Every structure is written in structure tokens, then in C-alpha cells.
Amino acid sequence: MITYTSATRQNAEEAFEAALAGDLKRVQKLADYTFHMETCDEEGNSLLHYAVRGGNLKLVRFLTEVCGLDPSWANKALVTPFDLAHRQAEAEGPGSNAAEIEAWMALWCGFDYESCYRNPILRGMYPDPSIVRVGEDYYMVNSSFVFFPGIPVSHSRDLVHWETIGYVMADPCWAKEHLGPLEGGRGFWAPDISYHNGWFTVCATLRLNDDADCIQTQFVSRSRRPEGPYGEPVIHRVAGIDPSIFHDEDGRSYMLLNRGARIMEISEDGKECLSKPQLIWYGWDKHGPEGPHILKKDGWYYCFLAEGGTGMGHKITVARSRQLMGPYEDCPYNPIMTQKDPAAAIQCCGHGKPVSTPDGRWYMVYLCSRYLENKWGMLGRETCLDEINWTADGWPVVNQRKGPSYMAKRPLGTSYVQKASGLPYSGWLCPRTIDGSRITVFEDGCLQIRGEAMDLNDRACGSLLVKRQPDFNFTCEYEMWAPGKDGYQDAGLTLYYDENTYIKFGIKGDCLFVEEYVDNAYIRRQEGKFVPGTGPVFLKIVTEGLNRTFYVNQEKFCTFEGVTSICSEGLKKGKRFTGAMTGVYNNGTNLICWRQHRSI
Image (cartoon, rainbow, N blue to C red; front, top):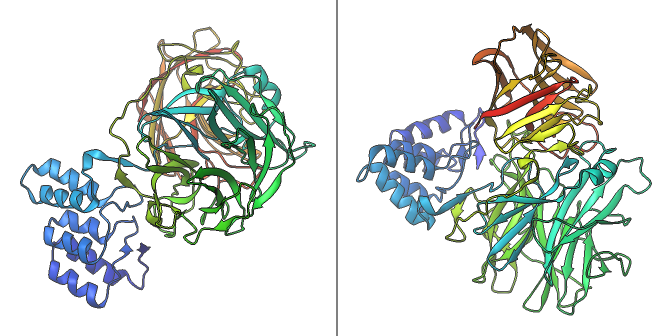
């Protein structure tokens, strides 16, 4: 799709107006002479979005059957024409024009509204997915960088609904030693999970600071249970990133690393390197080839790579060979997954790994990004899912090479999710480690932090708890109280990216304040008088795109507009690969408590 410019604005507005009026003849005339049918408005709405709202089934059929517009195409808010038809059908009831349009779209798409799933399947900072199936259960890991607990392990029975069930790195002492000195954005990169002979093995790059003598090391740990606990890790001082493990049919095991696909033999438990890395394929695009994975199927070794960098133009490519060590033949259909439309809502599609279902179908999990104003990737990189189809000549292509889907038929009927049991800190994260003597998360959801007189820009500061921001529009509200006599020394809510960019919404003595920190300074601040009461204070932050509005006890305090710092593009410094977080902090020295009141 393309977004209209001033040169095409008049024709576009005339076409959208005609579609909204349900004027089939006028739309047909415009389609014949003056209007590019793939044009979208500034919000990403296609002509089909307008036609659905116009309620003319004949026009909807013309746009889908003749013009090829897709009912599952999403605008920038991830709303599709199918969504609009469903909402109108619910409002107008059976037998209405809207109900007929929804039925037509279900027929055209090949699935009804209730049996679809939506991308991204994991929203917020869930980059670099790796997946494995054991029986009817699927397990996935994602990058966690310096956040602790590290490397989340998620479980699903239907490839769509996921629940975090554990963490590979859950030892706070180990994390303090190894993650403690690291700058934000470093730490655990691109983990991989595999299963062999009853063992779940997870490897990842442990990316150190640039002044380390070996900045890229490879972390390996394993467990009999996917949720852990995982055993004492081994760290290999082998340069490269994005490791994955491949267990061949002859019982030998290998680790792959970038650039391109380099391979070395390792022991089955991953503790020993038995050879030096050897390049077997440098990729199809040959720009930033990384994220290698090997799949053996029907006598072929398929090597998948992520290429083109992790920004716009990211892609998945594949090659194959009859021999593990090559030579590898490029797929004639490369790239097998990429986003070609710069105006689309989902971008930067790459770094994927295939997985099969018990009935022999194949799917790919891969990373993606969503942007505000086509520029600000506030949420970080997320996880998508699409089906793999195998061509007649034996090549895998993802979603028929159409790019990422926005809604598609659910792979499996069940939506069973294993509920998390004993999850460390109930899913809350902290940079680098968690000091259990200062931080407590209770079963009833109450949070308790004893501060350590450090501000959030100090890498040693651990007096905060955060969770991923899942969408561009998001509300969080907490009740906060100080059980001692010292009151609020500097505590409240935080919008957090890393130690270089964050916002604090807090109370210090009799001062209520909001302040934004970027690089080495607080760049803006709003403050007012705070009068302590006898009960808890309610703090709320409403996020609407780039605007953040702050409330105290249900009264608006202030709005910060144009908050672009809490995202990967907000500052050029170090490795900014994570995403926006939201949570609580205590930079005083006393004890502060919170209970999450609302988060939508």
C-alpha cells in the first residue's frame, strides 16, 4: 500500500468519499482513470476500510474480487476491514448489510472472525524468537538484554497464546556478577532453545561492554524441564552473535554463529567446543547476515539467516545443501519473509526460526517492529507468527511471500495456556539483578522496595521493577504508600528504557514532580505541591502514542507531549535494542509499597 501525497490528495479524498457513500459506479470510474487502488490515507486505511463503513456489499466484493484489496490488511492501529465489518455486524445484528459483508470476508479470507489470530503474537519487547516443539507443547525464548530474570521461556499449545513459565537465568548472584557491570542494551542477545535426548538446551550471546577483552561470548545452559531450573552455565569465549544449536541425526551437535552461518562442533551438553567455527554460507543479501538456524528435512539441510540489519528492510533468507558443511544453494524465492511496504503497520520482519506441528504443517516465528509516525519504535521488537508453505521444488516460503499477516487462521484449535506457577517475581523485571533483601513481590500483587539512595541513571541502581509496555496506547495506575515515618523521599512510577533515558513521576517530600532524563541530564520537569494524606496516593500514567499524561488521585497533573526518548531511536548511544517499560521506583532510603490498580 502507499500513502497519498498532496499530488494525489484530491483523487484520494474523492475515492474515499465515494467508498464511504457506497457509490460503486463512482469508485469504478475512479479506479479506471485516476485512482491507484493501493492508496491508503494518512492513518493507513485502505479504500476497503471506507467501503465496509459504507455498507455496500457489491462495492466490497468489487474491491476484493476485482481490485485485489485484502480484508485482513491493517491500518496503523492494526484495524482491518474485517475488524470493521465484524464490529458493525455485532452492532446491527443478523441479516444486516454488515453481517453479509462479514460473511463475505470470512469466505474470502478462508476463516471466520472467531477462528483467527493477530500479529504480533507477543507484544512489547520480545525480540529474536527461537522455538522448539516437544510433543504437542511449544516453547519459545526471547532476548532479555540486561533485564533480570534473564531469557524468558514461554509455553503454548496453539502457537498463538503464550505464557511465560520460567527464566533461564534466574540466579541473582550470577546476574550481579555478569550483568551488573553492563551498559543497557547489552547482556543476553538472541537466545536459542533446542531439545535433544530429554534435555532443553538454551544458548545465547552474552554481549559485554566494548572495553571487555572479549566482547562477544556464548552462554550455554540446560535443564530437564523447560521452565528450569537451568544448570550452571558455560560461557565460551568465541566471537560471534546469535548462536543456535543443531543436533544432527548421527548424534553429533553443532553451534552456529554469525557472520553468515559459521558452524562448529560442540559436545552434546554444549560445555565443550570440539572445532573452530567454519563458514558454510554467507547469505543471499550479504548485508548483516546473522541469526543462523539449521533445519534438516527430507534429506536437505536448510540454513536460515536474518539479513539486511534489524531495521527497515530486515528479511529472512534460506539456502540448502545435501551436506551439512555445504556447498549451499540459494533459494530462488529469497527473501522468504520481508516487509516490502514502507507504509505498513508491521515492519522489520526477520530473524526467524521454523517449527512443525504434529500434523506436519510448518510455521515461522520471527521478529518485527511497529512505529509511531514511521519513526519511533517505542515498543521494541516484537514476535510474529506465519505459516510456511513448501514449494513443489522443496523450498520454504513464509505467508506466500506476501510479508507479515495481520490476521490469519489459527494454526491449532486449542488455546490452552499453562498458567505460570512459581514464576520469579511474578513477571516483574529489574535491570541487571534483583536484591531480594530490598525488593519483595507478594502473592497478592503488592510490591515493596527499600531504596538505596541511587538515581535511575546509575547502573548500580536496582530499586525499580518494570514490565514491558505492550502497545502504543496504554494506561497504568498504582496505589502507593510509605509505611514508615519518613514519607516519600523520591518514589513513584517510571517510564523506563535504560539508564540513559527514562521518566520519573514521583513524590519527594511535599513536592509532586514529573521529570524526563535524556543522556546526561534531566531535560524537562513539572512540579507541584503535594499534601500527604492518611491513605495511599493513586498515581496514573496514560500513554497515547508519544504523549504521556500524569494523574494523581484521579486529577490531571500534567502532560508531556512528544516523548521520543523512551524508544530505541530516542538517543544515539551504545546499544539501544530494548523497548519501553513501565513500573515503579524508589530512589530514597526508606521502604515504599505499591499495588497495581489498573493496567490496560
